[in-house]
Every structure is written in C-alpha cells, then in structure tokens.
Image (cartoon, rainbow, N blue to C red; front, side, top):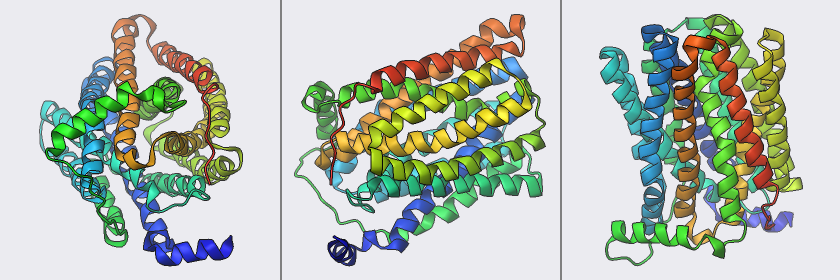
Length: 414
C-alpha cells in the first residue's frame, strides 16, 4: 500500500507536500479575513458607531443580504465551474472580490461602508465554494479526512496570526479593514502558483443555461443520492449555530460577558489554539470513525458549550465553554466537508458543493435575520440578557440538526 501511495504521489504533483501545504495555506489566509473583517472589525465598527441595538440590527441585516444573494447563485457558480472543468480561476477572482472592497470601507461613510462589506462578504462566501471543491485535487480517499483537518488546523493559525498582530499593534477596526485583506492576498497566492489543474470540460452549448438546468435537476433528484437530502437538512440547522456564533462572538464577549476589546483578543487566541488542536484531532478521528460519527460527537460538544455559555455570563465559564466551541469549529468543518464529499457524485462536485453552500448560507441568512429581530424586539426590555436569549435559540437549532444527522447513512470510501 505504501509503494502504491508513493507511486500515485509521484505521478500527481498536487499530492506533493508543497501542494497540500499551499492548499492548507489558503485556509489560513481566508481565516485571517474571516476573523479580522467578518467576526471583529465590522461588528465593532457598527456597534461603536450606532450602538448595540442599531449596530447589531444593521450588522446582521448586511450579512443576511450578502449571504442571501450568494446563496441564490451558489449552485449556479458551482455548476459553471463543473462545465468549465476548473476551480482555481474562479477561486482567484472571488478572492480579489473579498479583499478590495473591504479595504475601502474606512474611507467612506457608514452606509457605503456597509454596502462595501456586503460585496466583500459575497466574494468571500463565493470563494469557499471553489476552495472546498479543490479538496479532491490534493487528497486521496485514504487521507481525505486528514487533509481536510490539516486545512482547518492550519486555517485557524490564521486567527492566531491576526490576533497576535492585533495585540501587538492595537489596530482599530478601520485599520484592520485595510491590513487583513492584504495579508489574505499575500498568503493566498501560493495555491494559485503551485496547484496544477487540468481542465476537464464537459460538452455544452450554453454553459450558463446548462448550469442552471443541472442545478435544478440535482435538487429534484436528491432521492437518487442516499442520505444527501437528510444531510443537507441537518446542515441547515447546525450551521445556523456555527455561522451566527462566528458573527457575534466578539460582541457577545465584550458586551455580554464583560471582556474588554484587548482581553477579547487574548480569549480568542486561546479559543483558536483549541481549534488548531481540534483540527488535527477531529481530522484523524474522521478517517478512523468516519465523518458522520465524528460530526455527531462534535455537535454534542457544541450543544453543551452553547447551553453553558448562554446560561452563565462568567469569564471563567466562557473560557471553558470556549475551548469546546473552538475545538468544535474545526471538527464540524472537517467532518462536514468530508461527509458531503462522500455523499456526492464525483463528477459533479462543484455543483453539489454549490448546493452545500446554498444550504449553509440560507441557514445563515435566516439565523442573521432572527438575531436582528431578537435585538429589535427585546433589547429595550431585556438589555444584555437579549444576548443570552439569542444563544439559546442557537442551541435549539443545534439540537434539531443533531437529531436529523443521526439518521444519515454513511457510505465509506477507499
């Protein structure tokens, strides 16, 4: 087996360590953007400018709009890449779209800044479709869980990098909008230089029309792929908790738990270290146990963490729950991505990862709107306790997702 594996790696340059490392480095790069811009800068920027109630409402509305637009076109974007037989050019284009508008936010007023954030977030979310689909290039059935875990673990090192830089430099949100996208661009470049992608075009006359038809045919034929429909239904619920937590983690820690902005940086550094360790751990367990079992256990740990975090607004308790949450961030993404791969037809990965993205983003839209509605309706009455009510709604969504994913059949590969 070792000889055979070595032979495969020698023939396929994308299986070299430098190629796998370049692929994982992109995860690190986009995590710099995710934490610095999405999780920290935009929320502090709006809450500082508009206050808790209006800032949270506008933040979640902006996220809902940008993600909803992306959700509507995700299957089409994925199907288009299948038709052209390539992912990397699309990944490059949307990486640029994530970075350039974000860098302009400090130089405009709040209204235009929110619009630029919507465009940048659309680009970031779109890039993930193609990045997830390139997992096939750099892995084999025997190590796909480990490579996916490696990407997540290295990715969370991006959070460590940007948090350390924030601690050392004290960049405010406006400065972060400029620096973080630049770091993203520089660290993302190796994946476009090192990876080799041979075009695998399928015959077509009108790529756009055929991509749309293929997408809707996929939706209508979900029953032909055992477990896929149930898995996507489960994903709708548990990614609500994941995505909303990413959006509000900084504001929750500072406004509800009582950390200062500087203390929050140290807290999230610790959570990120847990995520790095969790990426390697859950990646190995995904290969050993299978992605479904691993995913279910991760969801259980998240349910505990959300329950404790919602009920007890204490710094030490938050740190303890944060360790589970940090590890769970990595574990959920590792097992979730591999389980989707195993349930999908190999020749339509871009299209099906587009559908996968559509479900997660649709969930994020509804979750964001629900969070905004919670603050609009209850903040004047409940004050800080509104944050706790919001977290409890995420726990309910997580439990529903757990119940559904438990019955997903898992097809082993390799």
